[in-house]
Amino acid sequence: MPFVKKTNTAVEGNLIMYIELDEEFNELKKIELVGQALLGYASQSVEFNGTTLANTPLLSISELNAIDEMSAVVISKEEFYSIWDQVILVE
Image (tube, rainbow, N blue to C red; front, side, top):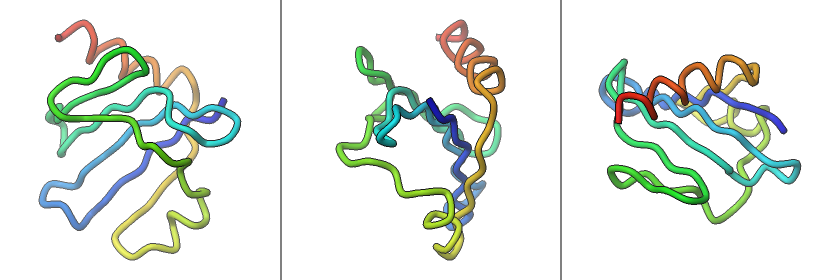
């Protein structure tokens, strides 16, 4: 399963999303931050603060990076879960 960090610089403070995907690039878990502040999170069993999983597969990394004010990189499972675990423990 791929893990992605997606940043949208069009949002004041930068919207940063950490996303766990399945093999078809469907979202399984997502964390949304503005700067360092938690905006919300979602999984297949929970939605917090308005964050939801997308109904369509995520674009490829190269397609995301072709969009102005958007960047995306693959991250490790360990990086994703270190952030996910912090978010869940805070809530």
